[in-house]
Image (tube, rainbow, N blue to C red):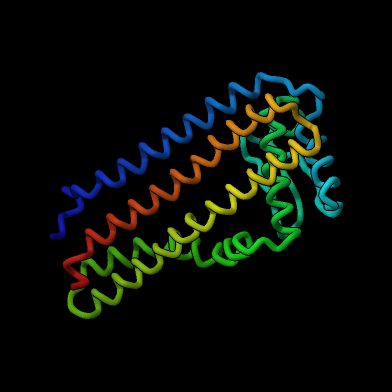
Amino acid sequence: MYYPMYFDPTYILVLIGVIICLVASAKMNATFSKYSRIRNHSGMTGREAAEVILHRVGIYDVRIEHVSGRLTDHYDPTSKVLRLSDATYNSTSVAALGVAAHECGHAMQHATAYAPLRFRGALVPVANFGSAIAWPLILVGLFLTGNTSSLILNLGILAFSLAVLFQLVTLPVEFNASNRAVRVLGSSGLLYPEELQDTRKVLTAAALTYVAGAASAILQLLRILLLTSDRRD
């Protein structure tokens, strides 16, 4: 049954997704803040650690730059630039080294042509387009009738599914980057074993935000399928 937009019980799925994301974000912020107060034994900054890690694995063509913000760290494969945020670049905390190493993990993936990373990169334009066009198509389809309605609704669902697929592909990419980070931090001796455990907690909390994002996207897709089920039958 299709419900009017002003009385839509499927909004509970959206609410569940929002709650999941808020809990994951709060967990990440709390964990990062806690371990940002613990200095690593070497006193090395996030930038210095990133340089050591990249050189250790034979990567010399990636620049390391500072970017404003908190936890805005990312690796840009197009320009081969690793950007570290205010909370990471000059910080000597175990949390900063973990985040810096995680971004180095993405640089390692790029250097070795890691398949899920390449697939995610190829999905970016279609996922962005899909997320932008999905709801307009769905709303138009709900106001039409007959075969035209079904066709437009199916196109909207397909478009949104591409955005969901991007979220799902992101999971192995992020988990793999964190695993690479933990391995290189351990093998290089940049962190003591107990520091490595603290860093692992930070990276696990960060990974949960991606899991939450994927779960929220799946719930949104389920909502769309419920809203449009009668029209597509």
